[in-house]
Amino acid sequence: MAEWFVAVNGESKGPWDEAQLAAEARAGRVDAQTLVYGPGTADWTPLGQVAALAPLLAAPRAAVAAAPAPAAAAAPAARAQAPSRAAAGGEKVGHTLEEFLAQTAEKDNPGDVFELESSHLLEVHVNGRVWSKLGSMVAYRGDLKFVREGAFEHGVGHFLKKAISGEAAPLSKIEGRGICYLADEKKTVNILRLDGRQSLCVNGNDLLAFEDGITHEITMHRRIAGMLAGGLFSVRLSGNGMVAIVSHGRPLTLRCSAADPVITDPNATVAWSGNLSPEFKTDISLRSFIGRGGGEAFQMRFAGDGFVVVQPYEEKPVIQGQGR
Image 1 (spheres, helix red, strand yellow):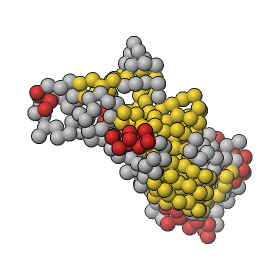
Image 2 (tube, one colour):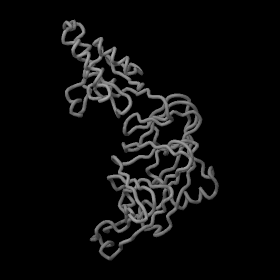
Image 3 (cartoon, rainbow, N blue to C red):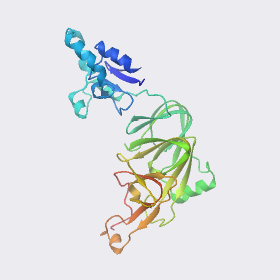
Image 4 (cartoon, one colour):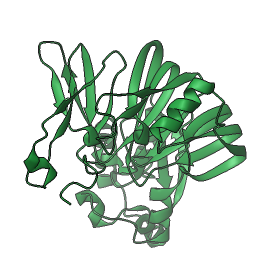
């Protein structure tokens, strides 16, 4: 049975299964406006708007129609529990302290090492060691320490690649036992799991965290090196475990093949299949260098059986000093 957390009088209750929710609905202690959080919901949502739970309200409606009106003393608590009208339209809610606490409370949803606390915030359950983007920690509880990745921790070759690439996203080890919350400039957090047979290449700036069982290696795209402001260096991830990547807005995944290649803007490219090796296309002319080109002088071409992940945002200009 699915388990749900329920906001009752400003407090988070649960986890409750659907049978218990139905019983609470029959007793009149929860209704269509009661905020719930569980499978398939990205945030606290009115119960009546959750398709899996709405049928639980059918029986209570008939019972409520025949039941006497609730005592006047219960009205303040009901008003405190009910979300504002703006909630139905997806607008900002939380006009009372109770509503604010219910909507922003930590969601205790144990299970995997990585959990989405919200679309922009990653909850990490640390029991040993986890790797994260340096500076991404916003809060933690428990006995944790944060150690920057050592220069020679993964060997001399790894160090030289980092030194040559000037990688802008150094890593930090989170060690100990506790819960840590990570975020990166309010970017959207995306969680995925590698099963040991898969690998993924991620733009170094878009890698938020990964489990210790994941191996990471900097990949240097030497062709036209020095001509791009970004996108020349990526991190190749392989092994067994969870990975969290970030993107500006909701990402788009495009399938590609040898017969149907995909061409992307390097500065909007977030990740791609580990088996793909992108080629860089150039369309450089005098017009490009004097700022009168189409703005897409450099492109990445992916041809092979795999996928490419892009975001609706360009991290930085492709050509350094373009238009000067």
